[in-house]
Length: 360
Image (cartoon, rainbow, N blue to C red; front, side):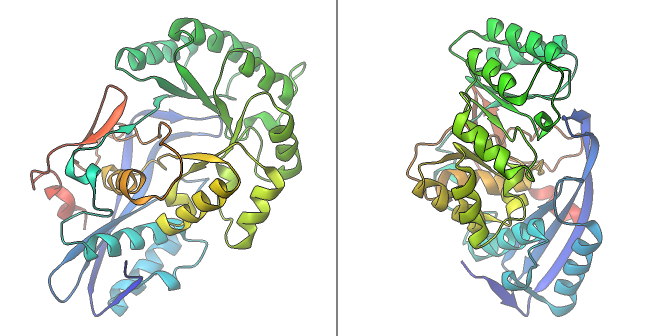
C-alpha cells in the first residue's frame, strides 16, 4: 500500500449523520454525529474514497483540526500518512482508506478478497440500544428472532438494582445458548451503595455473560489491572486504547493484561495501527473483535473488508460489532446487509455507491 501521493486532486465534504432514534449510552445521548468524506484522484484518473468519522466527546479529533488538515491536502494536492498528527486518528483512518482504495484496480476495494466479492460472511453481535427495560427486552427478542446468537448491550445508565432486574429477564428470555456481552463505557467507576464494582461483575458472571467492555475509566489503570486479574467476568479494553501509540501500547497491555481488545479503527488511527494492536494482543494470548465508531456505510464497508480479508490473526473471528449501518436516516447508500446474524456484501452492481459524489 502507498503511504503518500503527490500531484493529485483532493476534495472533501462533511455530512452530519442523523440518528433515527436517540443513541443513548452511559456516557451521553447522541442525536447526530459528524462525518467527513474525502476523495482523491491521481493523474491516471483513478479514484479513492475515505471517511473521517468522529464521536463527539470520545474521539480525539476536533472538527476545526479536521477541516484545517483536509484544507492543506486540497491546497498542496497531496496525501501523506506520515504527516497526520496522532491527535487526528480519524483523519488518518480516512487518508489510509482513500490511498488503499485508489491503489486498487477495482472501485472501493480496500482489501481485496471474499467479502468484497460477496462470498464471505462476518459473524456479528446484535446491538441493544439503551431505553426503558421493556424496550430493551423487545429489542433482544427481535434480534434473537432475526438469527443473532450474540447480543451486546450498554450498562451503567440505570441504578444497578434496576439493571440487574432487566438483565436477569434478558437471560431468561434468550436462554443459555445466547452469548451476552455488555459495555459499561467506564460507568462502573462510580460505586453505588451496596454495589462495589467487583460485586457487579460477579453478578454478571453468574448470569453467564461472556465479557464486559471498559468497566472503569481509562485513567484508572491500576484498578483495571486488578479487575482483569481477579474478576470472574472477562474484561475487554475499548476507550483505554484511544490515544495510545508506540511503546505505550506494550506498557498498557503488560500492565493491565485484559482478556479482550475492542478495536475501532477510526479511533485508533487506521488499519495499520489496529493491526499493530492485534499483533501485540495475540503475542500475549489476548483475543479481540472490531466494532464501529458509528461510521456511515462507507467506513463500515472498509472496516468489514479489513476484518474479513485484511487483518492478520491467529484466531477464528469472534462476532464483530459492525451492525450500525441502519442507525442513520441520511446514511450513504451501500451494498451490505445483515441476515441471520451475519454481515454480507451483495453482488456489486456498480450503482450501490453512486451517491458518493453528492457528498463532496
